[in-house]
Length: 248
Ligand SMILES: N[C@@H](CCC(=O)N[C@@H](CS)C(=O)NCC(=O)O)C(=O)O
Image (cartoon, rainbow, N blue to C red; front, side, top):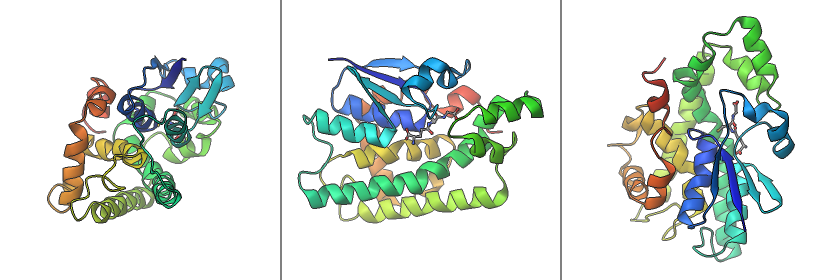
C-alpha cells in the first residue's frame, strides 16, 4: 500500500490533509510540488488534478483530489483512529461543518493571505505577465484577476474578515461547556479542516480576534497545537511569515 501526497508546505488545504494523515499514523510520501516552477500547472500534474491546485492524494492506483474529499476518503478507507462519527446523525453534523468551512472561512482566509504575503510573489511581473499567469490557472483565473497584482479591494477584504469572525464565533459556541473538539469528545476531520485557517490567522497576527474574547477557541488551539500530528504538519517553513517575512 502506498500513499503519496502532492502538496505545498504552506498551503492550508495541504495542511488539512497532513494533519489527518499524521493523526491517523499513516505513512505517506510527502511529495512537495514546486510552486516556483509552476509544477501544479504543468501537464504531468494536471493529468492528476485538472484543477491545477494542491493537494492531490494518490493511494495505490487511485487519484483523489480536493482536500475535504481526501480527508473523508482517508477516514473511510483507514478506519483505525476514527476521525468521523459513529452514527449517521453525527456524520451529518460533521459534514455540515465541512460544507460551512468550504463556503465561508476557506475562501475568506485567502484574501488576507494574498493581500499581506502571497501577493509579493507577483510584484516583479509586468501587467501582461501577471495577466498570463492569472489566465494559466484552470480554477483560479478569476481569483487572480480580482487580486490584480496588488491586493483585493476594501469591500472584499472587509467581507473576508467578517466571515472569519463569524467562523470564530461559531466555533466558540460549539466548544462551550468544556467540549474539547468541535464534535464533542472526539477530534474529527472537522477540527483538522478548520485548524489551518486558524493557524494562518495566528501566523498573520490576528490572534486578538480570539485570545481574550473567545477562550474556548484559544483553549482548542492550544490543545491541538500540543499534538504530535500538529507539530509534524507544521514543520519549519510551513508558515507564510517564515517565507515572506513582514506583511506587504
Ligand atoms: N478545493 C480545493 C482547493 C485547493 C486550493 O485552492 N489549493 C491552493 C493552495 S491552498 C492552490 O493549490 N493554489 C495554487 C495557486 O493558486 O497557484 C481543495 O480543497 O483541495
